[in-house]
Amino acid sequence: ASKAPAGGKPPAGPELAKTADVPVGGGTVVKDKKVVVTQPESGTFKAFSAVCTHSGCLVAEVADGTINCPCHGSKYRVADASVADGPAPRPLAEEKITVTGNSITLG
Image 1 (tube, one colour):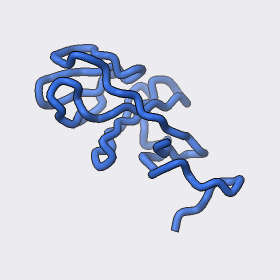
Image 2 (cartoon, rainbow, N blue to C red):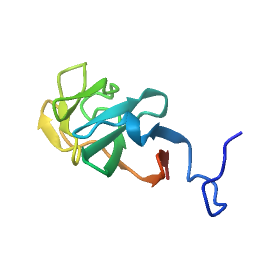
Image 3 (spheres, rainbow, N blue to C red):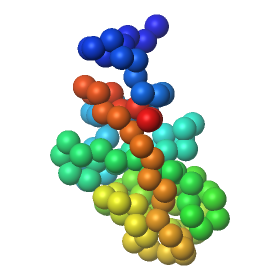
């Protein structure tokens, strides 16, 4: 059973990650939710679709400041998911997340 956070409100949505699982300057890919969570600077968490805008593959990793797709080499910046290296035609779509304590949830 999951515990509701202080204040009695249930979490916004499914938990994606713990804050400790998302490195500063990097991120983590949550494949089953098709979301990538990044921490561009300490304490700032962002989430984006993990579906590459080039041909729909799932991005595989976050390394060296970029979110990387294995299919054709597209790279997206961890701060805003803008295209750092193509062939991706546009940024990854932003997802809404909530950070409560050390838990990052969708919504």
